[in-house]
Amino acid sequence: MINSIIAYNIAEVEKKKVLSEAQDLYKSKLLSEEQWQRIKKEYATRLYTPSIFIKVLFFIFSLNGMMTVIVPFGQIFSNIGEGGYRILSFILGMLILFVTEKLLIRDKYHFKSGVTEAGIYSSLLFLAFAILGSDSSNLIICGTVGFLLAAFAAIRYLNLLALVAAIGFLGWILFQIITSVGGIVEALMPFIFMATSATLFWGSKKLQAKGMNVIFEDQFVIVKTIALLFFYIAGNYFVVRELSISLMGLQLSSHNDIPFAIVFYLLTALVPMGYIYWGIKQKSILWIRIGLITMALSVVTFKYYFSLAYPMLTVTISGAILIVIALVFFNYLKQIRNGFTREILLQDKWRSSDLTALIASQTLGGHQMNVPADDEVIFKGGSFGGAGAGGNW
Image 1: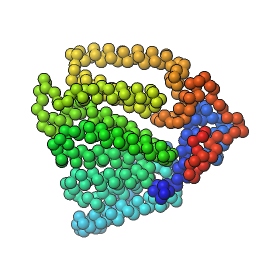
Image 2: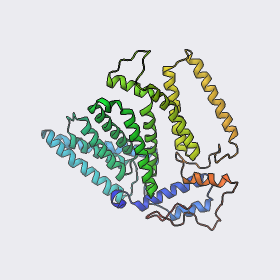
Image 3: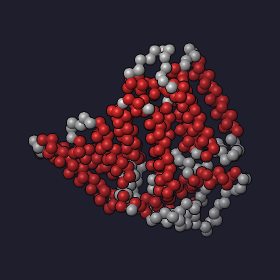
Image 4: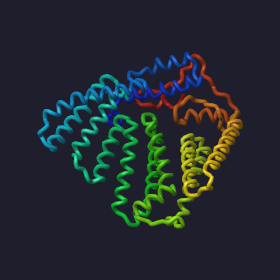
């Protein structure tokens, strides 16, 4: 079924994922040159993905090319009215989407090449105008249309920016619904957003556990990151206080506080600590990084409301303390301790995958990494649908 949902060739995408993981291992000197060359040959893919600089150039040139064709074409039908423009926008949107998918993705095997993004984004904008028109005063309807279009692009074309936009639209819809209802529901907004974030995180974990982490690996990382950040922000004291003033019209003097302020003080202080503790316990770099980011936001929040009257001195002392703590841990983790080390074992851009856990587990008991023999091929067979590469390295 997933083959009918995803526009790309699943087998080719899986091969590309395998090559990406293998390249990380090769750069980390966990694969020999011979093994890397054999993997490249066995999992060679036809997908075309240029460098980020070329992607940007392709994206800009593609947009300019489309505008060069569409603008004169639109001037021919300048007197058809808004209804005619909406019909024309729908036809153009579907046409651009069809050409992008059929010609670029399926025939030319473009994979996030910049040209495909230009086609996807422009077609979605045309479709959004065709559905909403120029006068769209209902914010919930606008958010719903934006969410559906962004979710479509995020799933079918594995587009990460569309995924971020879809989550943003989802939050916007929830915010508009809560403010339109008002009353006790509006007062409970922080807890509603925290529950929604927790559900989003839990749902992504469930889907990932069902074996969908191969194609959607980066998507799961983004969803979980945004969910953790939103959970913290929803309970942050500064956010709750300022929204209470702007939305509920609370008149607070310098000596007054919001209702249940102690709850949000505790959430602001304890959630980052909980993130860091759980990240250390589970050896998850995602939780640790989000915990460090939110802890910095908590420090700024408390500093904003509780000043020591010497901001420069406070910042200087705090920075010096953090540097000392960092140096102490840097020296302490020269050796692997409880699965942690200061060394970069895998040259990976952002994720803490099963490979990191594998290496940590091998070092906990003092065991040595089993280096495959020259005649042993790793990435043999497995559970991936078309590529034949499984989770056993």
